[in-house]
Length: 162
Image (cartoon, rainbow, N blue to C red; front, side):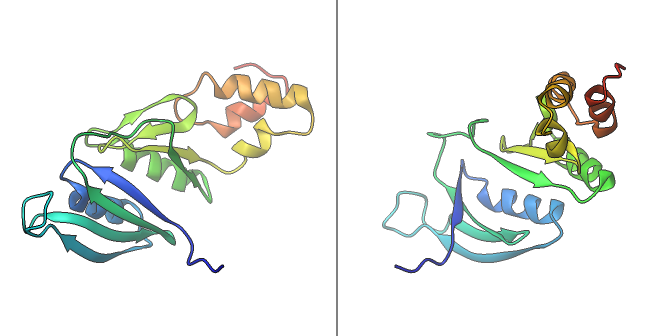
């Protein structure tokens, strides 16, 4: 059996096209794909956007205007593994502005309610250190943070408190 990969379907309440435009403005490596519209067959208003395809950072998405029945939760999130601190700062700022919000441990929720984990370089290495005591201290520091501060996590891992 062959596979053409995965496409993530995101359920929106009438604003899938706005969301796709927003994600393409935040993630510079992206492109818009096809747009499908509701027909007389329903269930949406004929001519209204039903689905919009888009791709960001090589990941394919479909935004579906399915209605208010389902909303996003933190049970699903996307990790952004950043190349450097400047990139982490960029994504953190972009995803929390215009109605987005900070959450714990580097997580943010964008203005559409979708959860993202903004991960600066070194953070995963610290919390998964082969020395369980170092990992525990780094994780303990991280648990007190909104935006991840790798330098502070490293100080905690090394046994220095803030």
